[in-house]
Length: 400
Image 1 (cartoon, rainbow, N blue to C red):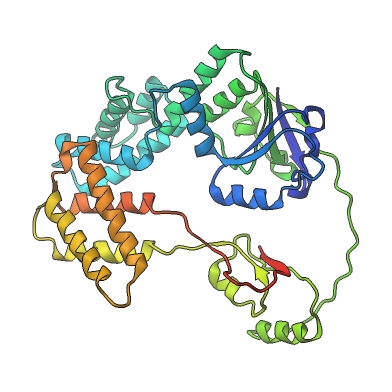
Image 2 (cartoon, helix red, strand yellow):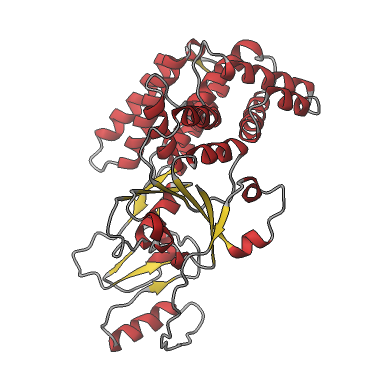
């Protein structure tokens, strides 16, 4: 069964009270990205959830697990892999066109795939585009849809799974599935949810105010779902003391307050996603925080800018890999090593290997190929979070 859970605040969801009738089932909470998943996992309160396991995963992990379950011989082609494959096609068929057109065509191609997989419908759209771009996208479409190559991109995976799950019928154990934090669902994603709901209890929480403004063309209206409201969270009366402070003197004010108080506390920053620098403005010890940290992207840009400046014509993949390996070795031999640089060099070396394995089109690298390599390295660089490394007893959190 498919149900839309309307709510005012996320506090109404984190206790999972809306699962009261299906509490004996295991539950999986699916989120659009790691940041939302981490946030929901931190707030989750399952103290009264007596039976069934609860797992919080990203949509990418959820779909990947489903593909493994329903198709042992298939694997989802990552965006970076798809970009490399189609860039190889571009090099063989459209090398006379400007390089910028590849990026524009690839972006529009992936946007169209998220909209529909119906080739006839997409052809109608292509008729309104620049003829060269339309030709490029049409070729990309043929390549991805070719059964010989076995490419299964994210959007094809949704459609494939929807059909496979319908075929499997009621042969599998039911679970609770909660899809939380999605501001948009594509048509193929909605079809997958409807298939999953045939044998599972599927819930999609949507904020009441957002639902009030939804029109017939918005994805919540495509779901044909029952509407439910979670049990109301009792409001609490909390005493608060308000203090004012001079501009740019928040730290002094907090330190003055800390001198008079030693109890547990939480600090709320008026940002949805506080960054590391904002957290560092809080001069109090014993507070836990977790923020995303962009440690590599600036170094990746710097490294590739240097490579492009020194490039003189085309260079073989072996020569390029040797150059980066030398940079790695030079950094490794320094007394004070920059471990972020070592990580960037390691990523580049590995991605050159992957690109040359995927297609023969990258035996040589010029400006186009190195620009593509930079994009792939950025896409595949690891997600990093900052947390405090202190043995001091934790007395609260910094939150957004």
